[in-house]
Image 1 (spheres, rainbow, N blue to C red):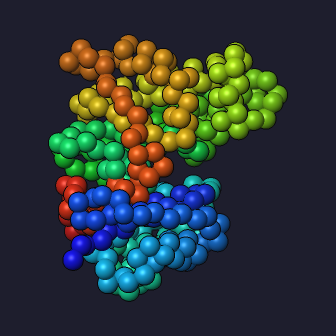
Image 2: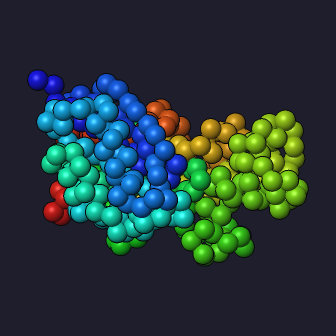
Length: 305
C-alpha cells in the first residue's frame, strides 16, 4: 500500500495542501483562504479540511508536514512570532492541534521559508541559502545537509538584517532588507517617489513599460538583495542561493542589480554566489513540508534540533 504524505503551506492569505507518495511525487493539491485573522483554531480547522478533502481516510496518511508563517519552535511546532497578516496565531501548538484534527496522524512543523528551501533542494545538495521575497522577506539555511534552526528568533531571517538606509522596517527597526525589497516596500517606495499608490505587481508593470521611478525602486531592491545574499552566503561558505516569492516573478527587473552586487562581493573562491529561481513556484513550501515526515530530507531529530 502506498504511504501518503501531506504537505501544508499556511500563509497569511492562502493555505495550500499537496499530497505526495513515499517518493515525493505529487498526487493532488487543494487550497483555500487561510482564515488568518480568525485565530489559530480557525487556521488549523481550514488546514485539516483541505487535507481531509484530498485524503478522507486519515489512516492512509503516514505523516503531515507544515510550513507555517512566523518563527516556529522546531521541537513542538509552536508558532512563537508572527507578522501582522495573522491574529491569534502566535502561541499555537501546530503539531499537537493539527494531529488531533487528523485523528492522530504525526505532524511536523517548520517555518514556511524552511519548507520552501526543502522543496527546492536538488539531489545531493548540502549547502544552500533560500530566500523568499514576497509580502515580506524570509530566509532559510541548509548547511552540511541539514536545516539550521537557530535560537529563539530563528535562523535565516535575512529580511531583518543590515542597514540599507533610513526606511522603517515592519519589525520596527530601521533600514532592514525587508524595508526595501519586500512587495509592500516596493509599493511604498514608489508611492513616495510619485504619489501614485500601486501594488508591487503594478509597479513592476510600470517599470517594464519604461517608468524610471519604478525602475529605480526595483534596481535598489535588487542591489540590496544581492548584497544581503552575498553576506549571508559568505559567512557560512554557501555557494548557492535559490530565490522565490511573488516579487521574484519580476526577475527581469531584479536580475541585473542582484548579479552586479554578487559580482562585487565574491566568495573566497573568487566566484560569486550562484543564484537560481524557484522550480516549483507556489507549491515549493507544501512540497518541502511533505518531505518532513518522509525521511526524504536529512533533518535534526526533533529531540535535538
